[in-house]
Length: 162
Image (cartoon, rainbow, N blue to C red; front, top):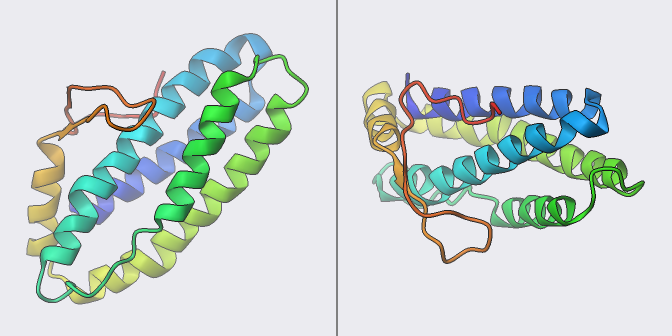
């Protein structure tokens, strides 16, 4: 599985996790949301610290700066807002729906524009090499609020499951 396939798999899992959260009762929502939030933070960190730096380090894509940090920060802010709200708050579901729409738009942009450009520029071998780096795990640095320290394995990991 190459780097883009790994990220696309995470996107598929994120879509499914958001569907489960949207369909869940208030009682079920907490566990699903916590797993989703942690999975999304891990995915974002992997993109920010492994995938996109490797893309920019490659001579064929060094001028390519596709990471939409604004989208990442907006979703992270929405996740923090949701985490602070009681699950039974009347504001929770509309806030979740807004975050979901933003995230789905970001995922769509990555998969249909960004990843296409990267795949056109890099070989399968290049993308496999990036995937190996991503699969070794990422150190979760505590400098950003809500992120935990420690290694997280990627091989066989399904990050959006409770």
